[in-house]
Image (cartoon, rainbow, N blue to C red; front, side, top):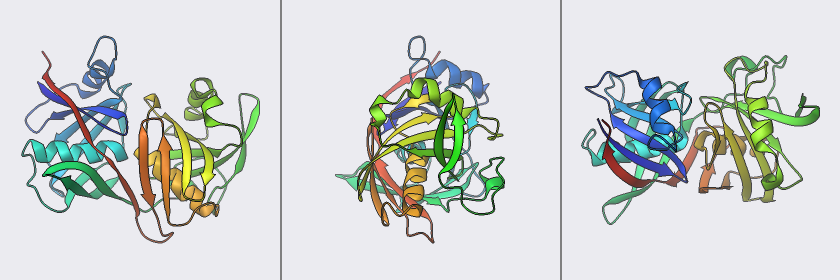
Amino acid sequence: MKFTKMHGAGNDYVYVDARSLKKDWPSVAVFVSNRNFGIGSDGLILAEESDVADVKMSMYNSDGSQGEMCGNGIRCLVAFAIINNIVSKKDVISVETLAGVKNVTPVYEDDKIVRCIVSMGLPEFQASKIPVKFDSTVPIIDAPIKVAGQSYEVSMVSMGNPHAVVFLESPVDDFDLTTIGPKFENLEIFPNRTNFEIVNIIDDNKLKVRVWERGSGITLACGTGACAVGVIARNKGIISDNVNISLPGGNLLVRWDGISDVYLEGPVELVFEGEMF
């Protein structure tokens, strides 16, 4: 089985053309993600046939669980699909995901895809749609929630998958994300678990973020997480329509006017190709 490893701002996945393959994909995801005994990645992403879009993205986390959407992964999937002639080269590529069909615009330099802009859809603030077991009919912003004996002001949103966002006064680099991240992920109020982002405000155009991804743990970047942070920051009046999200693996640009779709822009990079036996 041939594969390609790619990353978007350090968020790395193994990509497979699965149009004619049937495998135990959760088990494959666990194997390829292992950084000691496998290829090493945050998960597995498949290119599959779609009846409603140019290509279908099926995304598996490193623990084998399936994710609805991946902002970094979908950018690399489009590059992977174009490079391998799975889709035709054109201005906008439609991608079927478990969070709906997303439109992706490749950005070329010298005929090479270097970045992509993703129309991520509308953010969802309704508690039942995130989903979170929370008695609220308005957006959940800075709700006090106690985790591991400490109270956090938590804001929640879905970008096709659930996110819990906490803004910190102390440096995010000093935060014990290894301990607190999984506790947030598995809070009982999140029936489908959640992604967890911690944020420092650098200025009104830049935020510094670290991420605990549901099913994968600490990752160098998270596209949906960057969008969740940007959306929450705009709702809190911290930023305007555009923000640079600085993550350990690189920078992502998020644009939201408060009304229409959220747009995510970021790099794509091919790491290497190989074959699994």
